[in-house]
Amino acid sequence: MWYAKEYVPCRAGSLDGTGDIPHDRALIRAAGAQYHPPKGDHVTRDPLKTLFVGRLKLDITKEKLRQAFDPAAHIERIHLVRHIVTGVSRGYAFVEFSSVRDCQRAYKTSHGARIDGFPILVDYERGRVMKGWVPRRLGGGLGGQKGSGQLRFGGRDRPFKPPMRRGHSETPRIPSENRSDDCWRQDALRQVESEPENSTSHRQRRHVPHDDQYPKRRRERSRSSGRRHDRKEHRDRYKSRR
Image 1: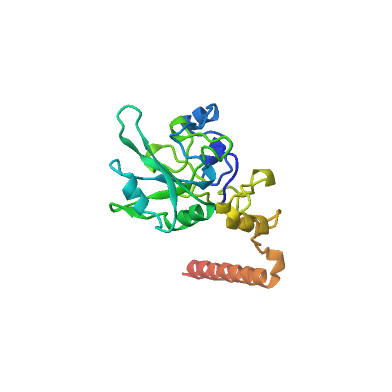
Image 2 (image 1 turned 135 degrees about the vertical axis):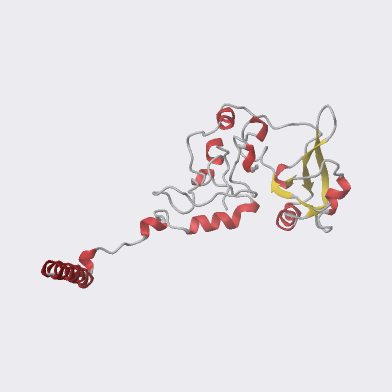
């Protein structure tokens, strides 16, 4: 799984991260959208120490959300996103930790933890970290359900898959200037950098032998076809005699 510094809606809308043409109306809307991250006292201070927590119940409280993380990790602030009019939770929150190490530990261990029997989604904040980020309400975002018609790939919930089209490498290439070098993606970047730049897909590397390389096999096929022809001619002669 790999990440990029810049969010491109068309690439996020493709399964392998190589798409360039929008295939739904939401991607067209996201391509022309301008998103400005929120500012003020209601947001966390440091986005690099903040995690996004999704799939929360509407009646979730800060105390229940705090119990889902390691007690050893020091949480400085929890921001539950609520509707501006009704005050009902929108099902996601942002959790800020005191150190990057605690944030790393929570990212690795708290993903999939259950709160009231439901697993939660833990990912890093993208609104203030990723360039060009467009939220889901503007046609972008990540994840989603199949029935929504707005699937977005490249996140922890739905990572990119190997390219489906021939001519592309097995792992989508990330330009050096677009690679994210933060603490969460060091292993993924190291794996991508270790691969050769001119690597080809499995279908391209597969070697299909030609008949000229196996003259013996070709001769056997010709002999077998000749035997079938001889048997057919013998049957025709026998029928003509009767």
